[in-house]
Amino acid sequence: MSKPTNKVAIVTASDSGIGQASAIMLAEQGFDIGITWRSDHEGAEQTAQQVRALGKRAEIVQLDLADPEQGGQSLLKLIETLGRIDVLVNNAGVNIKADFLETTFADWRKVFTVNVDGAFICAQIAARQMVQQGEGGRIINITSVHEHTPLPGSVAYSASKHALGGLTQSMALSLLPHKILVNAVAPGAIATPMNQMSNGDAHQVSMPEIPAGRPGDTREIASMVAWLCSQWSTYTTGQSFIIDGGFSLANPQFFMQK
Image (cartoon, rainbow, N blue to C red; front, side, top):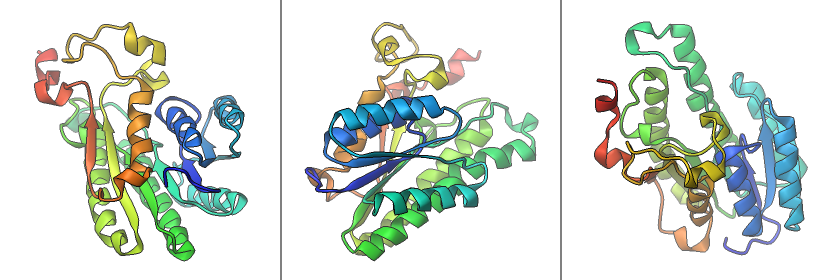
Protein backbone atom coordinates (compact mmCIF):
# COMPACT_ATOMS: atom_id res chain seq x y z
CA MET A 1 0.00 0.00 0.00
CA SER A 2 3.01 2.33 -0.10
CA LYS A 3 2.41 3.21 -3.77
CA PRO A 4 -1.32 2.69 -4.29
CA THR A 5 -2.89 2.81 -7.72
CA ASN A 6 -6.33 4.42 -7.48
CA LYS A 7 -6.46 3.56 -3.79
CA VAL A 8 -8.77 5.67 -1.65
CA ALA A 9 -8.38 7.01 1.88
CA ILE A 10 -11.23 8.75 3.67
CA VAL A 11 -10.37 10.95 6.63
CA THR A 12 -13.20 12.23 8.78
CA ALA A 13 -12.97 15.82 10.05
CA SER A 14 -10.17 16.54 7.57
CA ASP A 15 -11.02 20.23 7.31
CA SER A 16 -8.28 21.19 9.79
CA GLY A 17 -5.74 19.94 12.31
CA ILE A 18 -4.73 16.30 12.47
CA GLY A 19 -7.33 15.27 9.89
CA GLN A 20 -6.12 17.81 7.34
CA ALA A 21 -2.46 16.89 7.87
CA SER A 22 -3.29 13.18 7.55
CA ALA A 23 -5.26 13.71 4.34
CA ILE A 24 -2.39 15.63 2.75
CA MET A 25 0.25 13.12 3.82
CA LEU A 26 -1.82 10.22 2.49
CA ALA A 27 -2.20 12.08 -0.80
CA GLU A 28 1.60 12.39 -0.87
CA GLN A 29 1.69 8.59 -0.52
CA GLY A 30 -0.52 8.30 -3.61
CA PHE A 31 -4.03 7.94 -2.23
CA ASP A 32 -7.09 9.67 -3.61
CA ILE A 33 -8.75 11.37 -0.67
CA GLY A 34 -12.26 11.62 0.72
CA ILE A 35 -12.63 14.69 2.92
CA THR A 36 -15.39 15.23 5.46
CA TRP A 37 -16.34 18.31 7.40
CA ARG A 38 -18.99 19.24 9.94
CA SER A 39 -18.92 23.06 10.19
CA ASP A 40 -15.82 24.30 8.29
CA HIS A 41 -16.56 23.91 4.60
CA GLU A 42 -13.84 26.43 3.72
CA GLY A 43 -11.26 24.35 5.58
CA ALA A 44 -12.38 21.24 3.69
CA GLU A 45 -11.95 23.09 0.39
CA GLN A 46 -8.44 24.12 1.44
CA THR A 47 -7.59 20.48 2.16
CA ALA A 48 -8.97 19.49 -1.24
CA GLN A 49 -6.90 22.14 -3.00
CA GLN A 50 -3.72 20.82 -1.39
CA VAL A 51 -4.60 17.23 -2.29
CA ARG A 52 -5.32 18.17 -5.90
CA ALA A 53 -2.07 20.13 -6.08
CA LEU A 54 -0.36 16.79 -5.45
CA GLY A 55 -2.11 15.33 -8.49
CA LYS A 56 -4.60 13.25 -6.51
CA ARG A 57 -8.38 13.24 -6.55
CA ALA A 58 -10.25 14.89 -3.68
CA GLU A 59 -13.97 14.63 -2.95
CA ILE A 60 -15.78 16.41 -0.13
CA VAL A 61 -18.93 15.63 1.85
CA GLN A 62 -20.46 17.09 4.99
CA LEU A 63 -20.61 14.49 7.76
CA ASP A 64 -22.05 15.17 11.21
CA LEU A 65 -21.72 12.31 13.67
CA ALA A 66 -24.09 13.93 16.15
CA ASP A 67 -26.48 11.66 14.22
CA PRO A 68 -24.26 8.62 13.56
CA GLU A 69 -26.69 6.82 11.25
CA GLN A 70 -27.15 9.91 9.10
CA GLY A 71 -23.38 10.43 9.19
CA GLY A 72 -23.00 6.87 7.98
CA GLN A 73 -25.18 7.65 5.00
CA SER A 74 -22.86 10.57 4.16
CA LEU A 75 -19.90 8.20 4.34
CA LEU A 76 -21.64 5.72 2.03
CA LYS A 77 -22.27 8.55 -0.44
CA LEU A 78 -18.59 9.48 -0.37
CA ILE A 79 -17.49 5.87 -0.90
CA GLU A 80 -19.88 5.60 -3.84
CA THR A 81 -18.52 8.82 -5.36
CA LEU A 82 -14.91 7.66 -5.00
CA GLY A 83 -15.72 4.12 -6.11
CA ARG A 84 -14.03 2.30 -3.24
CA ILE A 85 -12.33 2.69 0.15
CA ASP A 86 -8.98 1.27 1.23
CA VAL A 87 -8.28 3.38 4.32
CA LEU A 88 -10.57 4.97 6.89
CA VAL A 89 -9.16 7.41 9.41
CA ASN A 90 -11.73 7.96 12.17
CA ASN A 91 -10.61 11.42 13.25
CA ALA A 92 -13.88 13.17 14.16
CA GLY A 93 -14.32 13.78 17.88
CA VAL A 94 -15.77 16.07 20.49
CA ASN A 95 -15.10 16.99 24.13
CA ILE A 96 -17.45 18.46 26.72
CA LYS A 97 -15.50 19.43 29.83
CA ALA A 98 -17.11 18.44 33.12
CA ASP A 99 -16.03 16.39 36.12
CA PHE A 100 -17.89 13.22 37.12
CA LEU A 101 -20.37 14.78 39.55
CA GLU A 102 -21.20 17.58 37.12
CA THR A 103 -21.50 15.54 33.92
CA THR A 104 -25.09 15.36 32.72
CA PHE A 105 -26.33 12.26 30.98
CA ALA A 106 -27.18 14.38 27.95
CA ASP A 107 -23.57 15.58 27.67
CA TRP A 108 -22.29 12.06 28.32
CA ARG A 109 -24.39 10.80 25.41
CA LYS A 110 -23.30 13.66 23.11
CA VAL A 111 -19.64 12.75 23.59
CA PHE A 112 -20.17 8.99 23.25
CA THR A 113 -22.45 9.45 20.25
CA VAL A 114 -19.70 11.14 18.24
CA ASN A 115 -16.56 9.54 19.65
CA VAL A 116 -17.75 5.93 19.94
CA ASP A 117 -21.06 5.40 18.12
CA GLY A 118 -19.93 7.49 15.16
CA ALA A 119 -16.58 5.75 14.93
CA PHE A 120 -18.29 2.33 15.17
CA ILE A 121 -20.76 3.06 12.38
CA CYS A 122 -18.15 4.59 10.06
CA ALA A 123 -15.73 1.72 10.67
CA GLN A 124 -18.40 -0.92 10.08
CA ILE A 125 -19.48 0.70 6.81
CA ALA A 126 -15.88 0.98 5.65
CA ALA A 127 -15.00 -2.57 6.71
CA ARG A 128 -17.98 -4.08 4.92
CA GLN A 129 -16.95 -2.31 1.73
CA MET A 130 -13.35 -3.48 2.16
CA VAL A 131 -14.53 -7.06 2.65
CA GLN A 132 -16.62 -6.80 -0.50
CA GLN A 133 -13.62 -5.47 -2.44
CA GLY A 134 -11.55 -8.43 -1.19
CA GLU A 135 -8.24 -6.57 -1.05
CA GLY A 136 -7.92 -5.84 2.66
CA GLY A 137 -7.55 -2.35 4.06
CA ARG A 138 -6.66 -0.18 7.03
CA ILE A 139 -8.77 1.47 9.71
CA ILE A 140 -7.10 3.96 12.02
CA ASN A 141 -8.91 5.41 15.01
CA ILE A 142 -7.57 8.70 16.34
CA THR A 143 -8.03 8.35 20.08
CA SER A 144 -5.96 10.39 22.55
CA VAL A 145 -3.28 9.94 25.17
CA HIS A 146 -6.37 10.02 27.40
CA GLU A 147 -7.27 6.62 26.00
CA HIS A 148 -4.56 5.51 28.43
CA THR A 149 -4.60 8.07 31.24
CA PRO A 150 -7.65 10.10 32.28
CA LEU A 151 -8.05 13.81 31.69
CA PRO A 152 -9.32 15.42 34.91
CA GLY A 153 -12.47 17.44 34.35
CA SER A 154 -13.36 15.58 31.13
CA VAL A 155 -14.87 12.33 32.33
CA ALA A 156 -17.03 11.64 29.27
CA TYR A 157 -14.15 12.35 26.89
CA SER A 158 -11.73 10.10 28.79
CA ALA A 159 -14.23 7.27 29.00
CA SER A 160 -15.10 7.57 25.32
CA LYS A 161 -11.45 7.38 24.28
CA HIS A 162 -10.94 4.31 26.49
CA ALA A 163 -13.98 2.78 24.77
CA LEU A 164 -12.62 3.58 21.33
CA GLY A 165 -9.33 1.92 22.30
CA GLY A 166 -11.23 -1.23 23.27
CA LEU A 167 -13.22 -1.12 20.05
CA THR A 168 -9.95 -0.86 18.11
CA GLN A 169 -8.66 -4.07 19.66
CA SER A 170 -11.93 -5.96 19.09
CA MET A 171 -12.13 -4.80 15.48
CA ALA A 172 -8.52 -5.84 14.89
CA LEU A 173 -9.25 -9.44 15.88
CA SER A 174 -12.52 -9.58 13.95
CA LEU A 175 -11.15 -8.12 10.73
CA LEU A 176 -7.71 -9.71 10.52
CA PRO A 177 -9.06 -12.72 8.55
CA HIS A 178 -10.13 -10.19 5.89
CA LYS A 179 -6.64 -8.60 5.84
CA ILE A 180 -8.02 -5.41 7.36
CA LEU A 181 -5.63 -3.96 9.92
CA VAL A 182 -7.00 -1.77 12.69
CA ASN A 183 -4.89 0.47 14.93
CA ALA A 184 -5.22 3.59 17.05
CA VAL A 185 -3.09 6.71 17.20
CA ALA A 186 -3.22 8.44 20.59
CA PRO A 187 -2.03 12.06 20.42
CA GLY A 188 -1.14 14.23 23.37
CA ALA A 189 -1.32 18.03 23.25
CA ILE A 190 -1.15 18.96 19.57
CA ALA A 191 -1.07 22.42 17.97
CA THR A 192 -4.53 22.36 16.39
CA PRO A 193 -7.34 24.91 15.99
CA MET A 194 -9.22 22.99 18.71
CA ASN A 195 -6.39 24.00 21.05
CA GLN A 196 -6.30 27.54 19.63
CA MET A 197 -2.97 26.85 17.92
CA SER A 198 -1.49 26.26 14.47
CA ASN A 199 1.42 24.08 13.38
CA GLY A 200 3.85 26.96 13.73
CA ASP A 201 3.03 27.12 17.44
CA ALA A 202 4.30 23.57 17.87
CA HIS A 203 7.82 24.89 17.49
CA GLN A 204 7.37 28.21 19.30
CA VAL A 205 5.00 27.71 22.24
CA SER A 206 6.55 26.54 25.50
CA MET A 207 4.74 23.83 27.49
CA PRO A 208 7.06 23.02 30.42
CA GLU A 209 4.57 20.54 31.89
CA ILE A 210 5.35 18.25 28.93
CA PRO A 211 8.84 16.65 28.92
CA ALA A 212 9.32 17.61 25.25
CA GLY A 213 8.64 21.19 26.29
CA ARG A 214 6.19 21.97 23.50
CA PRO A 215 2.96 20.87 21.83
CA GLY A 216 3.08 18.43 18.93
CA ASP A 217 2.93 19.29 15.25
CA THR A 218 -0.06 17.78 13.41
CA ARG A 219 2.37 16.26 10.91
CA GLU A 220 3.98 14.28 13.73
CA ILE A 221 0.64 12.52 14.13
CA ALA A 222 -0.05 12.31 10.40
CA SER A 223 3.27 10.60 9.80
CA MET A 224 2.18 7.72 12.07
CA VAL A 225 -1.12 7.52 10.21
CA ALA A 226 0.80 7.40 6.94
CA TRP A 227 3.10 4.65 8.21
CA LEU A 228 0.11 2.59 9.33
CA CYS A 229 -1.13 2.79 5.73
CA SER A 230 2.21 1.72 4.24
CA GLN A 231 3.54 -1.66 3.18
CA TRP A 232 5.80 -1.76 6.25
CA SER A 233 2.95 -1.92 8.77
CA THR A 234 1.45 -5.20 7.58
CA TYR A 235 2.47 -7.03 10.81
CA THR A 236 0.83 -4.40 13.03
CA THR A 237 -2.77 -4.52 14.24
CA GLY A 238 -4.71 -3.87 17.42
CA GLN A 239 -2.14 -1.41 18.74
CA SER A 240 -2.41 2.11 20.13
CA PHE A 241 0.53 4.40 19.39
CA ILE A 242 0.98 7.20 21.93
CA ILE A 243 2.57 10.37 20.53
CA ASP A 244 2.62 12.84 23.39
CA GLY A 245 6.09 14.29 23.92
CA GLY A 246 6.53 12.15 27.03
CA PHE A 247 3.41 13.50 28.77
CA SER A 248 2.13 10.08 29.82
CA LEU A 249 5.52 9.20 31.32
CA ALA A 250 5.57 12.26 33.58
CA ASN A 251 1.75 12.48 33.82
CA PRO A 252 1.83 15.97 35.37
CA GLN A 253 -1.88 16.69 35.02
CA PHE A 254 -2.88 16.00 38.64
CA PHE A 255 -0.06 18.13 40.05
CA MET A 256 -1.06 21.00 37.77
CA GLN A 257 -4.50 21.12 39.36
CA LYS A 258 -3.24 21.41 42.96
